[in-house]
Every structure is written in structure tokens, then in C-alpha cells.
Image 1 (tube, rainbow over the protein chains, first blue to last red):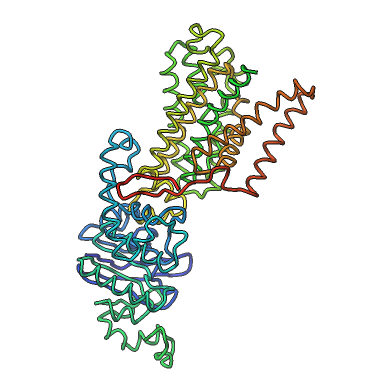
Image 2: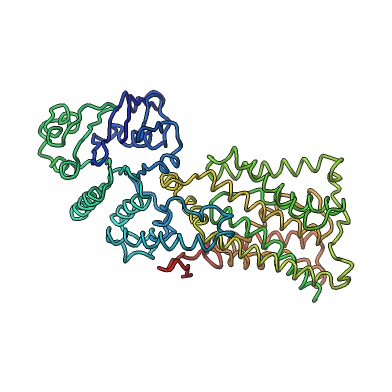
Amino acid sequence: MLDVKHIDKAFGGLQALSDVSLTVEEGTITGLIGPNGSGKTTLFNVITGFYEKDKGTVTLQGESIGDLPPHSIAERGMVRSFQIPQVPRGMTVMENMLLAGQSLIGENPIAVFSRWSAVQRQTREMIERAEELLESVGLLEQRDELTGSLSGGQVKLLAIAQTLMTDADLILLDEPTAGVDLALTDQIMELLKDIHRGGKTMMLVEHKMRVIGNVCEYVYVLDAGKVIASGEPTAVQNNQRVIEAYLGTEDAVGGKEWK
Amino acid sequence: MFAFLIHFLVMTGIFAIAAMSLNFQVGLTGLSNFGQAAFMMVGAYTSALMYMAGVPFVFGVLAGMIISAIFALIIALPSHNLRADYWAIVSIAAAESLRLFINNEKWLAEGPFGLRGIPRPLSSLFGDNYAVFYFFFVLACVGLVYFALERLNKSPYGRVLRGLREAEDLMEALGKDVFRFKALAMIIGGLVAALSGSLYAHYITFVSPETFAPDVTFLIWTMMIVGGSGNAKGVLVGALVITLLNTSTRLLKDYLYLPTSLVAALRTLSIGVLTIAFVVARPQGILPEHKHVISHAGEEGVS
């Protein structure tokens, strides 16, 4: 579904990504792990068009998307979330959901006047859908609250619901459980599996091995801008190079983050 | 006193239109347009020159709006990636360039002497009651602009504008062409500001480059800040308050026998002090931006 080949990206003298290639198969949940600063988010930004790459190709369902702006990539069915969720704090949860609707008639200011009833009809459909999705993530009660008043965990859930609202085929989530407690992490894991069962393909950046092992079918490990290993989660977890890169020393294998 | 009241209300209406336009760009979208006076100037000069050349009033006004929209697009094209503060610099530079161009030409609009004796449409019909007629005409324009901009604000289009004010990257990630939305916001604001300028020109009957100096832009900004950035009703209130200060201080000259220079200084001072007071003590303005609560049936309530 998504083919990333030979990506190079440098910031000045710093080579953030070198010759990174990976594939996301349709219908899978693919993980991307690696220590801080290994280039995971940079790779996300390159794939989704937020950064220009120096070299390489990105192909989504056979179509080259490497030179498209982010919004065109989203329109083609690949939508991302942000590591630090961006939420317009002055807007309600429902408004945030409606923002994620696609092909909205009412985004054309002329149609707002010439086809107002069609705009209203479409908005009602979007509200129905948004309410279903909010219910599935447990935010229906917060429907009319400003996002600025939500807790950090609720914002994470909203960001996931928003990506679903776009009806994208491929969803890229940047650390959906970062800064979230254990109980909510479990809830998010279950949510991701539900979404997957619903037919979505996903790719996630994660730090917590527990999440990767539980959710992902295939994992790529990034270190210092290079893919150093890939495979099924159990195989990767026991890969010596990964352990060294990820943890520095073998002693830390028992550390909390790892298990 | 009645004449003054009508004059005050007409000026309030004219500036309210310019302030609602600014609020659409700044309050909702977050595009710091510091060149608002130039858009008014385009409208004022275009409709004045065309009306003086015999073109029907309405066509002159529409032409002014279209040229202003093009001017807005020209500013938006190179600036769409800029942060708010740089956007402010570009817009004020573009506005001043236009003003200085008009100031230094002679062939088109009499340079610094400006356009004198701009005819008032339908003036033979209303005679001495012209200001009253004009008041209702301006009021209708205010109503129309208010309705149109509020509908846009509540539409999916306006929702994206408010979204990109705080989270531009998120809007891109959700498939919104941010440049298109910003450029259209500038164009819509430009159309409305030009209308305000035309209304001014045909009411005051005299415009010059000095009429549209940057302090006019700042005056419109204070209307938005004091009234409530992001709230169209608040901006109307702001226009009323600031226009009151701006026009009534000259009455002081008549009643308190103050010298003209002192009155002009007092006017600027009072508006300045009021604005600072609001920025410090009540930055959300008299009527703050309200929460957009959307019912299950898609109706938007105010809360």
C-alpha cells in the first residue's frame, strides 16, 4: 500500500535519514520504533509531505506522492496524527471532528450561499458520523466542550477519532500513547485493534515495546536515521543490534520502557 | 445635534464594515492584515473615479471591490507561508506602496490633492435629507455584510479558517489546502473593505492619499480589539465606541472652546488609552468570541 524507497534527508550537516526504505502492506499495523532522535518523526514528516526529502520515492497505492503537498496526500487517503496533538483550543470537540470531514461542499465560500441547504444536509451527515466515532472513543459526553479543556489523554483520543473521521485508508499515528497512563494506554491499544478490524491500515511510531508487541504485525527499527532491523515484533525484540541501539546496554533490558 | 447624530451613525456604519472585514481576516483566520486602509482606498478611488466618469454607481462600487480582491490576492501570493508578524509587515508595506504611488502620480487621481467634489448618488432625489437616506443605505450594507460574514463563519469554510488560526499543520494534515483558505479570506476581506471605502468616498465627497494613512488601519484595529476580536457583534460595538470617541471629541472644540490642535491630540490620546486598557485588562474585548456549539440537527447555538 505504502512504499518508501531510499529516503535521504539532511538538516544542514546532520543526516537525519539515510537510505530509509520500508513498506506498509494493506490491512496491517506496522510499527516504527527507535530511540529518541533516530528520525521516526522526520520520516513521518517526509512521507506525509511536511518535509521535502533530498532523495528517494514515496508511493501510495501505486501513485508517486513524493512531491505532493500534505493536503494533497491527505486527500489521497493517507492521514497522520501529530506527536504533540495539535488542537484548536478555542473550538469544541464536535467542531474538531467536523474539520476532519472530506470533500465538504461548504468549504467553498460561494457554495455557502448558493447551496446552503446542501451544505446543511452534508453537515448533518457529518455530525451523525462524528457522534458515532466520538462514542467509540468515549468522548461523546465531551461533544460540546472546548478542546482546550480536555485532558491530555482525551486529546490523544480526539486526535485518533479525527483521523478516522477523514475516512483515510492508511492512518499514520505518531506516538498515540506518549504521555498517557497505563489504563489509557490499554484503552488506546484496544481502540487501535478495533480500528484495524474495521479494515484500516495503520502505521505507528511507538516507544513502548508493550504496545508494539501487542498491536503490530510488522516492525521497522530506526537508529541514527537508518533502518537497522525489521520483522515480526518478537523477532525484533530479541535482535541484538536492536537491543544495543535501543537501550545502550544489555542491563537495561529489564527496564520499564522495554517490558 | 440631529445632524451630528446621523453623521456619527453613518461613520460608525462605514467603519463597522471595514472592521468586520478586518475581523474576518485577523479575528477568525489569524492573518494580521495591517494594510486595511489600502483596501478601502482602492474601493474609494475606483468608485469615485468611475462615477465621475459617468459609470453607474453600483458598477463603480463592484469594480472597486474586484480590484481590491485582486490586490488582496497579490499580497497573499508571496506571503502565504509567512508567520503572523511577517505577514503584518508585508501588508503594511504593500498598503503604503499603493498610497505613495497614488500620492506621486498626477495622471490618474490628482496625486496628493486627492479627488474633490465626488458626486453623491441620488443626491437630487433626497436634497437636504441626504444624510438620512445615506444612513439607511449604509445600515443595509452593514446588515448584508454582517449576515454574509456570519454565515461564512458558521460554515465549513469558516470552521477551517478558525482551525488554521491555531493549528495550521493540522489543517494541512486533514487535507485542507491552507493557502487556498487564506487567500480566499484575504479576498473576501478585501471585497468588504473596498465597499467600506466606496461608502466613505461618496459620503465625505473628498478623498486623498492622506485619508487612507496607516492611522486609519490602526483605528480599525482598535475597533476590533476593543469590541471583541472574533465576534462580529462585538466588532460592531467596537466600531460604535471608537467612532464616538473619534467624531465627538471635535465637539469639545465647540463646547469647551479648546484649540483644534489640542482636540486632535485628545482624540488620539483617548483612543490610545482605551486600547491599552483593553489589551491589558480585557484582551477578549467587550463581547468575546463565543463557543460554536453545534446541535445534533446541525444548528449552531451561541453559548
